[in-house]
Image 1: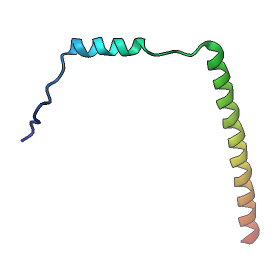
Image 2 (image 1 turned 135 degrees about the vertical axis):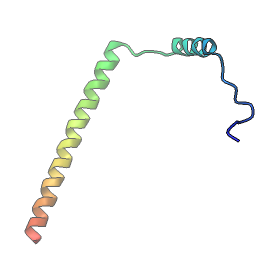
Image 3 (image 1 turned 120 degrees about the vertical axis):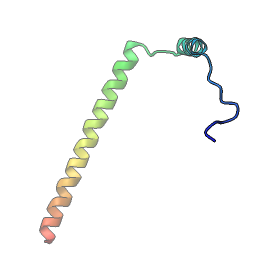
Image 4 (image 1 turned 90 degrees about the vertical axis):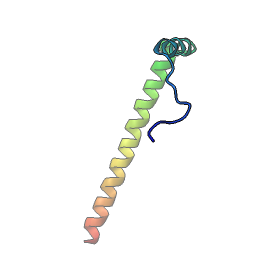
Length: 67
């Protein structure tokens, strides 16, 4: 019990060799793309934050009006 059949660990050297090969396949975005995506994410976050804040204010006002 506690031993699983066929679960031998790969040598560490083999793991890092495969890791290095996979790491070379990564296509990194250029600086212009990163800047555009960063601006987009920041703008959308600010807009959604404002929408949530407005909805929170309206709901709070409505509940205080009812109570």
